[in-house]
Length: 277
Image (tube, rainbow, N blue to C red; front, side, top):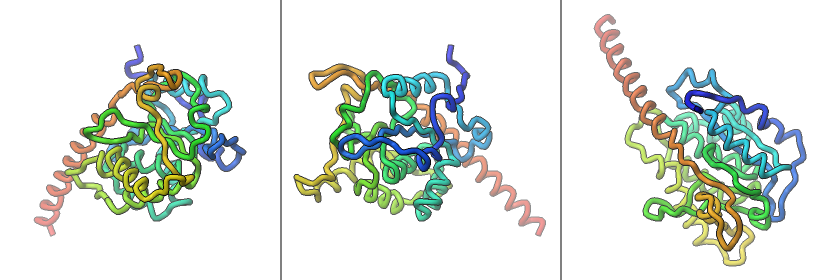
């Protein structure tokens, strides 16, 4: 059983520092052959940092599958410290917004956008498992975002994306995130709208509506059947399957409970101190 087991990812990934040290091959279209994956701690889960660099065993197996089917790709793993360092050096104006997010998934939403804007490459959530090599489907494209089958809520998903560095879409998306700044103690938050797939979908619609038909900045899509559901189609073999482990739902609920408890204790402490002084 996988229950409770965690695995260190150092044996199958590289630290982000290698991005400054190593020349990375680029596919036609400009996407570098580097894969980014992120694991961040919930802001209120203070002991989480003791496990930095580890993931649950199922996620480790899914991460490893990307290496098996995509030899020659650099696989980079980002932690909290890595993301904050990157933002402080390359995008310092984003750091206050990032630090204020009350949930790890919101930080991860922002981090993946800035990582692809800065370095380019392929991004996949930790619960995606590779089934075939992805390079041939990425070649010739400047930006690909996963098409969502759940059109009632979103047009695309930011769980699987590939981009060349400095694609202008990321500038628009990151600006919208900064405009929708969320406070550390805001409880009425729609994560999907503030940083997640709904926001990405709205920005995509806005971006594409102003783009000339022949623009080299066009945005294409990974079809959900091959890249999310893991099924073959007439266009090619299954590339990936999304396991939807939904771990962030539980983490967000725990965040809210801990934040509420902290506020309650802070309020009680203020009353006590006020009565003393």
